[in-house]
Length: 137
Image (cartoon, rainbow, N blue to C red; front, top):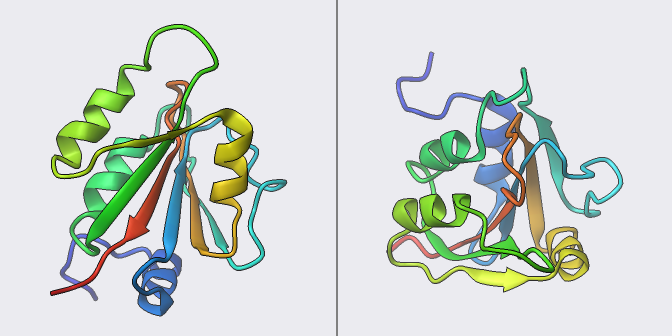
């Protein structure tokens, strides 16, 4: 039995096989996970119920396991910035969020460097987060 924060076996396996520059996508409940899965990515469904877990719940746990050197979000075509972006900034204080339009985000998130895609029950829109794993110093 593991005593650490992250205990999900499929996520642990994907992280253990990842390296510097590998990407992890944490998706909201609206993301087209099955049709936008990259060739090298493992797919883990954590969406238990609407709102459970949230993208930020998953992010908090991942941050106990991996260094993050970059984070990217899907920017709305118009309107104000989604409030969840500020939550991401609070959890990733040393990271400047990169922004992509919807279709560029899909391309980035399904690229060959993405090793893991985690689907959540997040109900807030534009709550998708693409992390790039950094170096362990």
